[in-house]
Amino acid sequence: MECYFIINYINYNLNIKTIIKIFKKMGFILSKIFGDLFSNQEVRLLILGLDNAGKTTLLYQMQFGEVKVTVPTLGFNVESVKYENINFQMWDLGGQSEIRPYWRCYYPKTNAVIFVIDSSDKERLDIAKQELFLLLQEDDLKGVPIAILANKQDVEGCLSDAQISENMALTDIKNRQWAIFKTIAKTGKGLDDAFKWLTGILKNNQS
Ligand code: G3D
Ligand code: MG
Picture 1 (cartoon, rainbow, N blue to C red):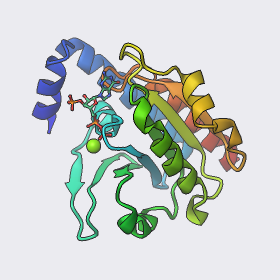
Picture 2: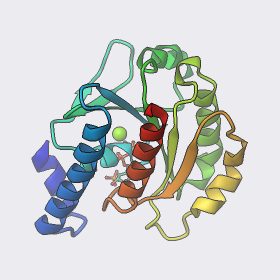
Picture 3: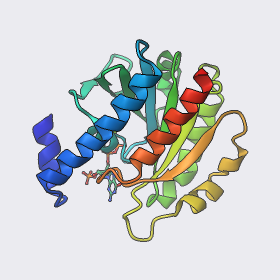
């Protein structure tokens, strides 16, 4: 898995030092904040979005353990990483309405959702919007904070966070705390802002 990551990232002209720096930085943030927050408890984060949005890239960007890909009989891939007490679970949304009921198995006890959007995929923004608003109606995800990532900000001609916010009518989200962040999952840019925001919210909700 590590080899895959490194080979993948060398293709993007990131040198080893940069990769280690990103790893260390993310690790510090995650272990420090989540460790302080939920010292004995498990934290469950769901990373969701349409296929190709950049979820797996994000997961690799943050990972310190092994990403386990499971192909359950339910018919969809779940990638998961456990890092200290943080449990990341990830799968692709969209185009699989018949298995949607099974996603609910993963909703209970979720602390936060990260919804990843490919900012350069203007054609499927409507589908992403539909999926997002379906999620927001789930009882088991009631009140769960959501960080929306306007990913692939390095792609020329991509939509800005403001444009995504407007096209997806994000200001209609009234039933929970949410925020949108500009990210480049490929390099890790913007991820720490999203995690800092999320952990700040969780901390407030705990106290
Ligand atoms: P998914 O898990 O949501 O389906 P992936 O998406 O993480 O597999 O990413 C899909 C493709 O988008 C990958 O390209 C990945 O490298 C690319 N990608 C992810 N994040 C970014 C980003 O911030 N910027 C750019 N330019 N590309 C990104 P490949 O070519 O490997 O399929
Ligand atoms: Mg993936």
